[in-house]
Length: 301
Ligand code: GDP
Ligand code: MG
Image (tube, rainbow, N blue to C red; front, side, top):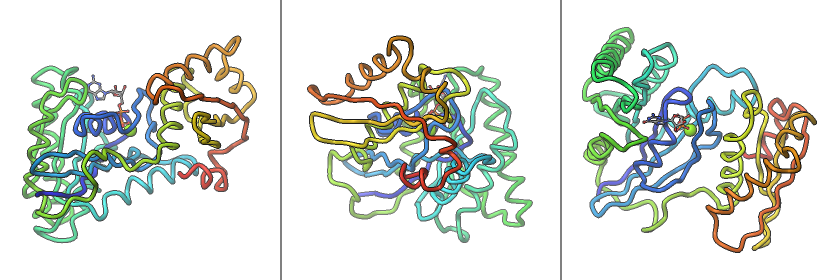
C-alpha cells in the first residue's frame, strides 16, 4: 500500500482547504472567501484500497503583520518539512505573482537533495472561473517560474519531475488526475491512520472551527481577523464555545440585532453536528489578542 504525507501549500485564498476537502471527500477543514481563514495545520486522510494519503492543509504563506500572522506563516513553512510530497497551488484567475513565487520557491527548496522527497506537483486551481487560454497561460508561466527559480538557485535538478495539473476544487474537475499522480509518487508503507479516520483534529477544535466558519460568512470585511473561537466546555450534550473579538463594537456585530447573527451561526453549526447537542455561544472582548502570545498559546495557534 502506498502511504505518505502531502502538504498543500499556496498563498492565502488560492483554495488549499477546498482542495483538501475535495481530495479527502469529506469536509475536514473550513473554507471562506477571506484570506487567512485556516489557522491550524489540519490533516485530512484519504483512504483507498491501494493507498492512504495524509493531506496537510496549511495556513497560506504570506508576509505577516501580526504575531498571529507570524505564527501562521511559520506553521505553513514548517509543514513543508517531513512530508513525502508538496502540492503547490496557484490561482488560475490571477497572474503568477510574488506570493506564488515565494510558495513555489519554498516548495522546490523543501527537497534536501536530488531524487529526495518532497517532490513537487503544481496545481492551477479555480479553472472553472478561467478561460482555456488563461489556464494554459498559467500552467506555462508556473512552469517558467519553476525553471527560473531552480536556475537561480543553480540547482536545476529541483525542477525535474515537477508536474502541472489544471484543477477545480469547487467542481472537482481534474482532481482525480491530481490524486492519481500524488498516489503514484508515494512510497510503500503501512497506513498511518485506522480505516474511517478522515481527520486528526480533535472534536472540540472542529466545532470551534465550524463556529468561526459561520461567523466569517456573516460579518463585515474588517472583522474576520479579529475573531477567534475556542470550546471552553464539553459536557455532552452541552458544548460551550467562546468567541473572542477585540472590541466592544465587534461584540455587538457578532451578536447581531436581537441576537440574530449568533442564532443563525448556532443553527448552521448545529446542523453539522450530532443531533441533540446544546451549543452555547459566548462572545468575549479580549483586546489585541492577535498580538498577545498568551492568548495565542491558549488558542493553540
Ligand atoms: P485557502 O485560503 O487557500 O484555504 O482557500 P479556501 O479553500 O478557503 O478558498 C478560498 C475561496 O476560494 C473560497 O471562497 C472558496 O469557495 C473559493 N474556491 C476554492 N477553490 C475554488 C475553485 O476551484 N473554484 C472557485 N470558483 N472557487 C474556489
Ligand atoms: Mg485554508
